[in-house]
Length: 154
Image 1 (cartoon, rainbow, N blue to C red):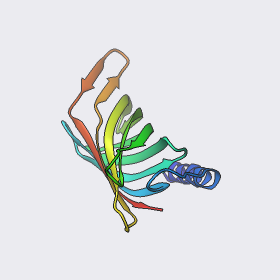
Image 2 (cartoon, rainbow, N blue to C red):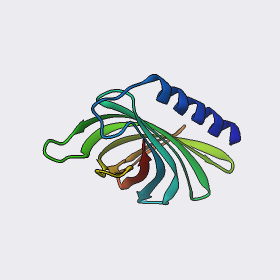
Image 3 (cartoon, helix red, strand yellow):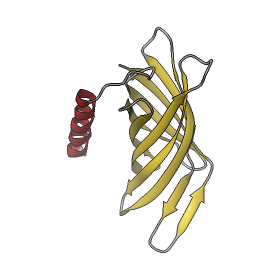
Image 4 (cartoon, rainbow, N blue to C red):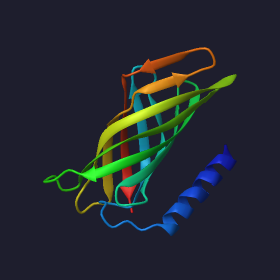
């Protein structure tokens, strides 16, 4: 687990040092991610980084239900005209669940809102993130999942 955090930290530092963003309300946000809804509530660290004017990546390592979830999302984002600090985004990515005795793979599409507080280095995001399970002999769709993020921005 220590190696995983070291690798994720190196990737984040590399991304921060090689890109510039001019149109977003913030470049990078680091904080707490919560995935909740139908099933277990998952909580853990979350990072969101804008690497171009309309694109961002988000990574989360969440814990709950005797499992660890590692998630990564690519997101298209755009400002909402007339709503300063408020962006909408849509995207998705993979989610891997690690638990005692095995692992599971999910695809997670998402659509949401991201608000950066004016004059404070804080942002909050809320999204709908249905989960599609892809297994060896089975698949499942869970539409009742949501996410919320509280991030310090820099």
